[in-house]
Image (cartoon, rainbow, N blue to C red; front, side, top):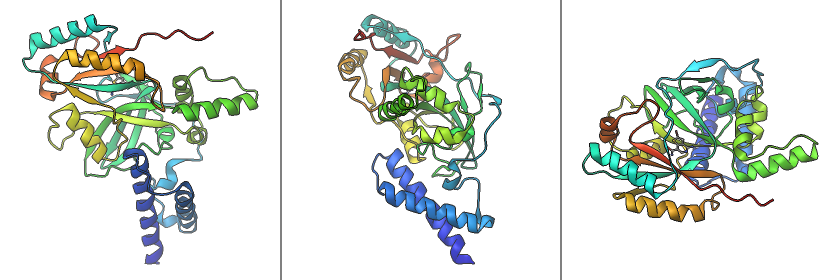
Length: 316
Ligand SMILES: NC(=O)c1cnc(N)c2cc(Br)sc12
Protein backbone atom coordinates (compact mmCIF):
# COMPACT_ATOMS: atom_id res chain seq x y z
CA UNK A 1 0.00 0.00 0.00
CA UNK A 2 2.40 2.65 -1.28
CA UNK A 3 0.21 5.54 -0.19
CA UNK A 4 0.56 4.62 3.52
CA UNK A 5 4.38 4.54 3.39
CA UNK A 6 4.35 7.82 1.46
CA UNK A 7 2.02 9.34 4.06
CA UNK A 8 4.29 8.07 6.87
CA UNK A 9 7.37 9.54 5.14
CA UNK A 10 5.58 12.87 4.56
CA UNK A 11 4.49 13.05 8.23
CA UNK A 12 8.08 12.37 9.41
CA UNK A 13 9.49 15.11 7.22
CA UNK A 14 6.84 17.60 8.35
CA UNK A 15 7.44 16.80 12.04
CA UNK A 16 11.24 16.97 11.83
CA UNK A 17 11.03 20.18 9.76
CA UNK A 18 8.74 21.68 12.44
CA UNK A 19 11.29 20.66 15.11
CA UNK A 20 14.08 22.32 13.14
CA UNK A 21 12.07 25.50 12.61
CA UNK A 22 11.11 25.65 16.29
CA UNK A 23 14.28 24.46 18.05
CA UNK A 24 16.92 25.12 15.39
CA UNK A 25 15.79 28.44 13.96
CA UNK A 26 13.54 29.58 16.84
CA UNK A 27 10.85 30.28 14.20
CA UNK A 28 7.87 27.98 14.96
CA UNK A 29 5.79 27.13 11.89
CA UNK A 30 3.13 24.82 13.41
CA UNK A 31 0.91 25.38 16.44
CA UNK A 32 1.26 22.82 19.24
CA UNK A 33 -2.14 21.39 18.25
CA UNK A 34 -1.10 20.97 14.58
CA UNK A 35 2.21 19.40 15.68
CA UNK A 36 0.50 16.96 18.06
CA UNK A 37 -2.05 15.99 15.39
CA UNK A 38 0.73 15.09 12.93
CA UNK A 39 2.60 13.09 15.60
CA UNK A 40 -0.56 11.22 16.68
CA UNK A 41 -1.34 10.34 13.04
CA UNK A 42 2.24 9.09 12.53
CA UNK A 43 2.08 6.96 15.71
CA UNK A 44 -1.31 5.52 14.62
CA UNK A 45 -0.11 4.68 11.07
CA UNK A 46 3.12 3.09 12.36
CA UNK A 47 1.07 0.99 14.80
CA UNK A 48 -1.24 -0.15 11.97
CA UNK A 49 1.74 -0.77 9.65
CA UNK A 50 4.74 -1.78 11.80
CA UNK A 51 6.59 -2.83 8.64
CA UNK A 52 7.16 0.88 7.97
CA UNK A 53 8.44 1.67 11.50
CA UNK A 54 12.12 2.73 11.70
CA UNK A 55 14.14 3.62 14.87
CA UNK A 56 14.85 7.18 13.64
CA UNK A 57 11.16 8.03 13.24
CA UNK A 58 10.18 11.09 15.34
CA UNK A 59 7.56 8.83 16.96
CA UNK A 60 10.50 6.93 18.53
CA UNK A 61 11.76 9.91 20.53
CA UNK A 62 10.09 8.52 23.62
CA UNK A 63 10.73 4.82 24.22
CA UNK A 64 8.71 2.68 26.61
CA UNK A 65 11.84 0.90 27.83
CA UNK A 66 13.18 1.47 31.38
CA UNK A 67 16.96 1.16 31.63
CA UNK A 68 18.50 -0.70 34.60
CA UNK A 69 21.61 1.51 34.68
CA UNK A 70 23.65 3.66 32.30
CA UNK A 71 26.48 1.89 30.50
CA UNK A 72 29.83 3.70 30.53
CA UNK A 73 31.12 5.00 27.21
CA UNK A 74 34.53 6.39 26.26
CA UNK A 75 34.39 9.68 24.35
CA UNK A 76 36.00 9.80 20.89
CA UNK A 77 38.09 12.72 22.21
CA UNK A 78 38.28 13.94 25.79
CA UNK A 79 35.77 16.67 26.57
CA UNK A 80 37.66 19.88 27.38
CA UNK A 81 37.40 21.69 30.67
CA UNK A 82 37.98 25.43 30.71
CA UNK A 83 40.29 27.63 32.71
CA UNK A 84 38.35 30.36 34.54
CA UNK A 85 38.78 34.12 34.38
CA UNK A 86 37.11 36.27 37.05
CA UNK A 87 38.10 39.82 36.09
CA UNK A 88 39.75 42.03 33.46
CA UNK A 89 43.21 41.15 34.72
CA UNK A 90 42.64 37.45 34.09
CA UNK A 91 41.35 38.18 30.59
CA UNK A 92 44.31 40.46 29.78
CA UNK A 93 46.64 37.70 31.00
CA UNK A 94 44.80 35.14 28.78
CA UNK A 95 45.17 37.47 25.78
CA UNK A 96 48.87 38.03 26.52
CA UNK A 97 49.50 34.26 26.60
CA UNK A 98 47.60 33.82 23.32
CA UNK A 99 49.44 36.65 21.54
CA UNK A 100 52.76 35.28 22.73
CA UNK A 101 52.08 32.34 20.41
CA UNK A 102 49.92 33.72 17.57
CA UNK A 103 50.05 37.09 15.85
CA UNK A 104 46.68 38.48 14.73
CA UNK A 105 43.81 36.92 16.72
CA UNK A 106 40.02 37.21 16.71
CA UNK A 107 37.85 36.05 19.65
CA UNK A 108 34.36 34.53 19.61
CA UNK A 109 32.40 35.04 22.83
CA UNK A 110 29.50 32.66 23.54
CA UNK A 111 27.09 32.40 26.48
CA UNK A 112 28.15 29.84 29.07
CA UNK A 113 24.95 27.81 29.57
CA UNK A 114 24.44 26.54 33.10
CA UNK A 115 23.59 22.94 32.27
CA UNK A 116 25.39 19.66 31.53
CA UNK A 117 27.83 19.07 28.72
CA UNK A 118 26.52 16.28 26.47
CA UNK A 119 28.39 14.55 23.64
CA UNK A 120 26.41 13.27 20.61
CA UNK A 121 27.60 10.82 17.94
CA UNK A 122 25.98 10.51 14.50
CA UNK A 123 26.79 7.74 12.04
CA UNK A 124 25.47 7.92 8.45
CA UNK A 125 23.44 10.89 9.62
CA UNK A 126 21.58 9.09 12.42
CA UNK A 127 21.98 9.76 16.16
CA UNK A 128 23.58 6.56 17.48
CA UNK A 129 24.83 7.60 20.90
CA UNK A 130 24.67 10.38 23.43
CA UNK A 131 26.62 10.59 26.68
CA UNK A 132 27.19 12.79 29.70
CA UNK A 133 30.63 14.36 30.16
CA UNK A 134 31.49 12.09 33.09
CA UNK A 135 35.16 12.65 33.92
CA UNK A 136 35.84 14.02 30.45
CA UNK A 137 37.16 10.70 29.14
CA UNK A 138 34.33 8.31 30.08
CA UNK A 139 30.69 9.32 30.44
CA UNK A 140 27.31 7.64 30.90
CA UNK A 141 25.40 6.53 27.82
CA UNK A 142 21.99 8.28 27.96
CA UNK A 143 20.95 8.07 24.29
CA UNK A 144 17.31 7.13 25.00
CA UNK A 145 16.87 10.20 27.21
CA UNK A 146 18.56 12.54 24.74
CA UNK A 147 16.25 11.33 21.94
CA UNK A 148 13.32 12.82 23.86
CA UNK A 149 14.78 16.35 23.45
CA UNK A 150 13.29 17.83 20.24
CA UNK A 151 16.22 20.30 19.99
CA UNK A 152 18.49 17.27 19.37
CA UNK A 153 17.98 16.06 15.76
CA UNK A 154 17.54 12.29 15.28
CA UNK A 155 18.90 12.73 11.75
CA UNK A 156 21.33 15.28 10.35
CA UNK A 157 20.07 17.49 7.52
CA UNK A 158 23.21 17.11 5.39
CA UNK A 159 25.25 14.03 4.50
CA UNK A 160 28.01 13.18 7.01
CA UNK A 161 29.51 9.70 7.50
CA UNK A 162 30.31 10.40 11.13
CA UNK A 163 29.90 13.52 13.25
CA UNK A 164 30.71 14.10 16.93
CA UNK A 165 28.96 17.11 18.47
CA UNK A 166 29.34 18.69 21.91
CA UNK A 167 26.80 20.95 23.50
CA UNK A 168 25.00 21.85 26.68
CA UNK A 169 21.81 20.13 27.84
CA UNK A 170 19.79 22.48 30.03
CA UNK A 171 16.39 23.08 31.58
CA UNK A 172 14.73 26.36 30.54
CA UNK A 173 13.62 28.52 33.48
CA UNK A 174 9.94 28.04 32.57
CA UNK A 175 10.27 24.25 32.66
CA UNK A 176 12.10 24.51 35.99
CA UNK A 177 9.41 26.65 37.65
CA UNK A 178 6.61 24.39 36.37
CA UNK A 179 8.45 21.24 37.48
CA UNK A 180 9.02 22.56 41.01
CA UNK A 181 5.38 23.65 41.24
CA UNK A 182 4.29 20.10 40.33
CA UNK A 183 6.74 18.63 42.85
CA UNK A 184 5.56 20.96 45.59
CA UNK A 185 1.93 19.97 44.92
CA UNK A 186 2.99 16.30 45.03
CA UNK A 187 4.92 16.84 48.27
CA UNK A 188 8.18 15.90 46.56
CA UNK A 189 11.56 17.58 47.25
CA UNK A 190 12.23 20.58 45.00
CA UNK A 191 15.22 20.99 42.70
CA UNK A 192 17.61 23.73 43.88
CA UNK A 193 18.23 25.15 40.39
CA UNK A 194 17.71 24.39 36.67
CA UNK A 195 21.15 22.80 36.40
CA UNK A 196 20.40 20.20 39.07
CA UNK A 197 16.96 19.63 37.54
CA UNK A 198 18.53 19.07 34.11
CA UNK A 199 21.07 16.62 35.61
CA UNK A 200 18.31 14.71 37.39
CA UNK A 201 16.15 14.67 34.24
CA UNK A 202 18.94 13.49 31.92
CA UNK A 203 19.83 10.66 34.31
CA UNK A 204 16.31 9.23 34.55
CA UNK A 205 16.20 5.48 33.89
CA UNK A 206 12.74 5.93 32.36
CA UNK A 207 13.01 8.20 29.30
CA UNK A 208 9.27 8.94 29.47
CA UNK A 209 10.03 11.02 32.57
CA UNK A 210 12.86 12.80 30.74
CA UNK A 211 10.42 13.57 27.89
CA UNK A 212 8.10 15.38 30.32
CA UNK A 213 10.89 17.63 31.60
CA UNK A 214 11.02 19.85 28.46
CA UNK A 215 14.80 20.06 28.27
CA UNK A 216 16.79 22.10 25.74
CA UNK A 217 20.17 21.68 24.04
CA UNK A 218 22.62 24.19 22.53
CA UNK A 219 25.31 22.68 20.27
CA UNK A 220 28.64 24.51 20.17
CA UNK A 221 31.44 22.21 19.03
CA UNK A 222 32.16 19.52 16.47
CA UNK A 223 35.10 17.11 16.26
CA UNK A 224 36.71 17.62 12.87
CA UNK A 225 34.08 16.47 10.39
CA UNK A 226 35.51 14.40 7.51
CA UNK A 227 33.78 16.72 5.05
CA UNK A 228 36.83 18.99 5.05
CA UNK A 229 38.02 21.41 7.65
CA UNK A 230 35.80 24.09 9.21
CA UNK A 231 38.14 27.08 9.46
CA UNK A 232 36.68 28.96 12.43
CA UNK A 233 34.41 28.64 15.45
CA UNK A 234 31.82 30.85 13.73
CA UNK A 235 31.93 28.45 10.74
CA UNK A 236 31.40 25.54 13.19
CA UNK A 237 28.32 27.30 14.62
CA UNK A 238 26.95 27.90 11.08
CA UNK A 239 27.60 24.25 10.19
CA UNK A 240 25.81 23.02 13.32
CA UNK A 241 22.81 25.20 12.46
CA UNK A 242 22.74 23.87 8.88
CA UNK A 243 22.79 20.32 10.30
CA UNK A 244 19.64 21.04 12.30
CA UNK A 245 21.06 21.77 15.75
CA UNK A 246 19.86 24.48 18.07
CA UNK A 247 22.78 26.94 18.29
CA UNK A 248 22.66 29.74 20.81
CA UNK A 249 22.40 32.96 18.75
CA UNK A 250 24.01 35.20 21.39
CA UNK A 251 27.60 35.11 20.20
CA UNK A 252 29.89 37.97 19.25
CA UNK A 253 33.21 38.31 17.42
CA UNK A 254 35.83 40.77 18.67
CA UNK A 255 39.41 41.49 17.52
CA UNK A 256 40.66 43.05 20.76
CA UNK A 257 40.52 41.69 24.31
CA UNK A 258 39.48 45.18 25.51
CA UNK A 259 36.24 44.75 23.51
CA UNK A 260 35.76 41.29 25.09
CA UNK A 261 36.25 42.83 28.55
CA UNK A 262 33.68 45.57 27.81
CA UNK A 263 31.19 42.95 26.56
CA UNK A 264 31.72 40.83 29.70
CA UNK A 265 30.88 43.91 31.78
CA UNK A 266 27.69 44.49 29.76
CA UNK A 267 26.64 40.87 30.12
CA UNK A 268 26.93 40.86 33.92
CA UNK A 269 23.97 43.27 33.86
CA UNK A 270 22.08 41.25 31.22
CA UNK A 271 22.71 37.75 32.59
CA UNK A 272 19.07 37.28 33.68
CA UNK A 273 17.59 38.43 30.36
CA UNK A 274 17.46 34.91 28.94
CA UNK A 275 14.90 32.09 29.38
CA UNK A 276 17.76 29.83 30.63
CA UNK A 277 20.50 30.21 33.25
CA UNK A 278 23.96 31.31 32.21
CA UNK A 279 26.93 31.48 34.61
CA UNK A 280 29.39 33.32 32.38
CA UNK A 281 30.80 33.57 28.89
CA UNK A 282 33.15 31.34 26.91
CA UNK A 283 35.88 33.19 25.02
CA UNK A 284 37.57 31.27 22.20
CA UNK A 285 40.18 32.01 19.57
CA UNK A 286 38.03 31.96 16.42
CA UNK A 287 40.55 30.53 13.95
CA UNK A 288 40.74 26.71 14.17
CA UNK A 289 44.30 26.56 12.83
CA UNK A 290 45.37 28.96 15.59
CA UNK A 291 43.52 26.79 18.14
CA UNK A 292 45.66 23.89 16.90
CA UNK A 293 48.85 25.97 17.24
CA UNK A 294 47.92 26.98 20.78
CA UNK A 295 46.96 23.43 21.82
CA UNK A 296 46.24 22.37 25.41
CA UNK A 297 47.82 22.54 28.85
CA UNK A 298 47.55 19.40 31.01
CA UNK A 299 43.84 19.99 31.62
CA UNK A 300 42.44 22.71 29.34
CA UNK A 301 42.84 24.48 26.00
CA UNK A 302 45.15 27.49 25.70
CA UNK A 303 42.75 28.90 23.09
CA UNK A 304 39.68 29.28 25.30
CA UNK A 305 38.74 30.57 28.74
CA UNK A 306 35.51 30.86 30.73
CA UNK A 307 34.69 34.29 32.16
CA UNK A 308 32.63 33.56 35.30
CA UNK A 309 30.06 36.13 36.36
CA UNK A 310 30.63 37.46 39.92
CA UNK A 311 28.63 35.59 42.58
CA UNK A 312 25.38 37.36 43.42
CA UNK A 313 24.08 38.24 46.87
CA UNK A 314 21.25 35.78 47.49
CA UNK A 315 18.18 37.53 48.90
CA UNK A 316 17.65 35.89 52.28
N1 LIG B 1 29.53 27.82 23.96
C1 LIG B 1 30.36 27.06 24.66
O1 LIG B 1 31.45 26.71 24.26
C2 LIG B 1 29.91 26.58 26.00
C3 LIG B 1 28.67 26.98 26.48
N2 LIG B 1 28.23 26.57 27.70
C4 LIG B 1 28.98 25.77 28.48
N3 LIG B 1 28.50 25.40 29.69
C5 LIG B 1 30.26 25.33 28.03
C6 LIG B 1 31.19 24.47 28.71
C7 LIG B 1 32.30 24.25 27.98
BR1 LIG B 1 33.75 23.16 28.51
S1 LIG B 1 32.27 25.05 26.48
C8 LIG B 1 30.71 25.73 26.80
